[in-house]
Image 1: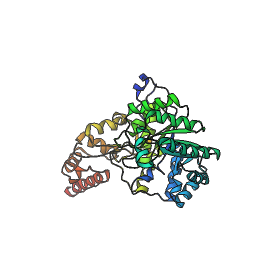
Image 2 (image 1 turned 135 degrees about the vertical axis):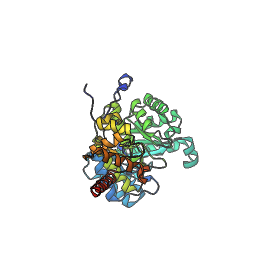
Image 3 (image 1 turned 30 degrees about the vertical axis):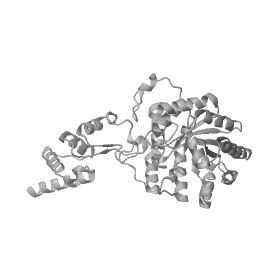
Image 4 (image 1 turned 180 degrees about the horizontal axis):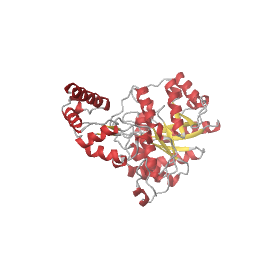
Length: 395
């Protein structure tokens, strides 16, 4: 098989005994992402982001929590009536009134949530598990009776006793819910326990399973993929991984991993960098420069050895091409740049230098105060102009 020029496939996956993934993406940027402290998207921003997510091809967009305010309800309803290819979803507590608001919003899916962990039952609800589950099932039944698809979501599922979780999902199945959702609300899972939990749920439940991972110890992406390998159907994401506390599983990481690791090419990931910039702008949250896929340094190279190899064959030091995700490669001149690499960069800039000019440029680079941060191509061009100007003056 000819090598893929866009990315290096993880060929070790051929030796791992897993079933082909059967997944869909539910992006929750407009709801859970907006619960990031200090973030509040305008209606226009949410509509723009919904269009971008739809262009990528996510199957479900969670548009908001409409009971929060009249303006939120208006926004969710407008997104639901935009004619998107994606299904629209909104969040609702296990309250009939919340379901009525969801019905008014014309969403396809309502996500009805309840917490069943001992901690939440004791310190939040002050009620028994059977009481809150009964209340939730009333809301589920009401939503189904009114023609909505229903996702029954167990908040703090990962600290809920597994028999309790299995029982709750079995009760929801009696009302023909369309999904049951495992919410790792505090990010306690690791890939091994994620796989175990999904498999235990599947032993008792036949409804498609959703996985909603938080990133409190940096495992949200790994846990989401582990859940998919174990048979979870719907994977929850946010753009740039924004969300409460340490955030959620980043959309860009999940989609690129699905392609590179599992060969799933259902999504137009060329939009990822553009979407990341919009979310950064709209949210006011700065993306770390070393953020996978969409960080400023994701395709930036300085080391001379790396730069020379990249110029000949980018796959030597890039898992996938920047173009694949709408990014741009950036070859930086800095402390670790040698003469050979500098020559390669100048050639890549389509500039021809004589050897003595190249040596003079190297000397300027090494003594430049900006070298700590890396010297940009425009700055290099200024240095070259200065060298040539001095050369003309000497002549």
